[in-house]
Length: 96
Image (tube, rainbow, N blue to C red; front, side, top):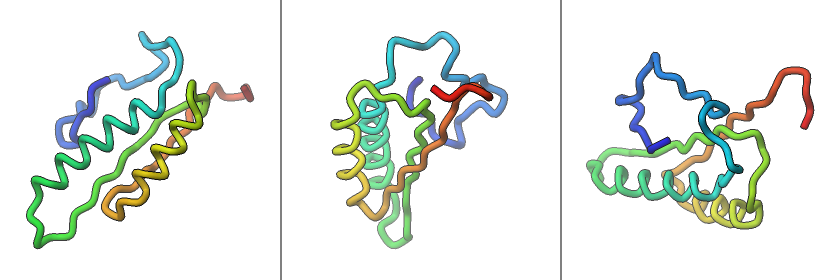
């Protein structure tokens, strides 16, 4: 899904990541897109006001390239104006 600013998100939209998607989870690709979107947005803000960005990652926790993802997350977390939040999704009753 494309990066969507919060105020433009469809409150009634279906953002279920399990539908019409697949082929593996590339969390690093999502983090990289989020990092770029956050940098662009932060740069456009009034420097006299405190601003920050939050990257929300929705994942089943399985990543196709965990080493790259961890390295990228470490780099992003060095920027005090950007936070990463994670939401885990799974099937109730299953532990995979």
